[in-house]
Length: 220
Image 1: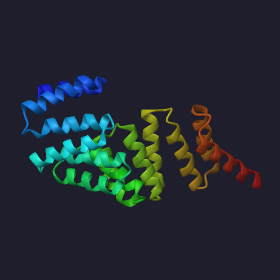
Image 2 (image 1 turned 180 degrees about the vertical axis):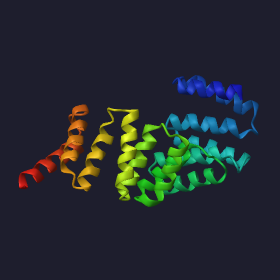
Image 3 (image 1 turned 90 degrees about the vertical axis):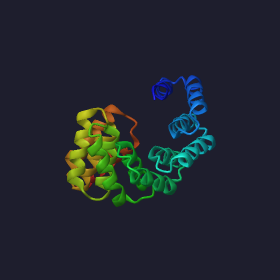
Image 4 (image 1 turned 45 degrees about the vertical axis):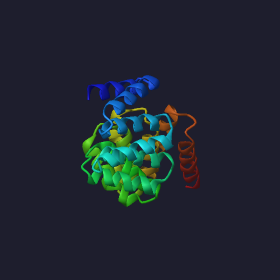
């Protein structure tokens, strides 16, 4: 296990060739242990070698059909290929096998979002937030999912929480503007569009939102 952790650390440091050497050694010394194959699969996925990554994940599943992290890895592989339906199936399998981590719930929610199944995405994104409450990327996507299912006030609370974690999150500011516009609170919408543009002057959606509000104001 110490060897595996060292390989993972090398991968995180961007020392991919050294990590590959470590994982090769682990697989050779423990050919019946799925963990080595899973980590090698993760490395290959990181290197965008999708075909070989899939072979390593499937080898891990051959050795242990209950290896939830292998199914999670295959889910990520399909997600990278924009094959969201198969990604969804594998994420769900990983959860069914007991993988109870924020990332897998988040990715399952994202797989549903990409298939335009907003209501199906919502409970998985909510679970991801429960498991990793301070992750701004997960919080933001949860806020989007709430807004897309017309739960506007809760979405506003979530976007505000994103801003407590990152006050310069221009997309959260823009989407707050959209929620206020949805409620016909035009003044507040414009304030948030302007705040987004202060941080990111070329934020196309915020520019469009501001233009829309200004046109609405001119009509009155």
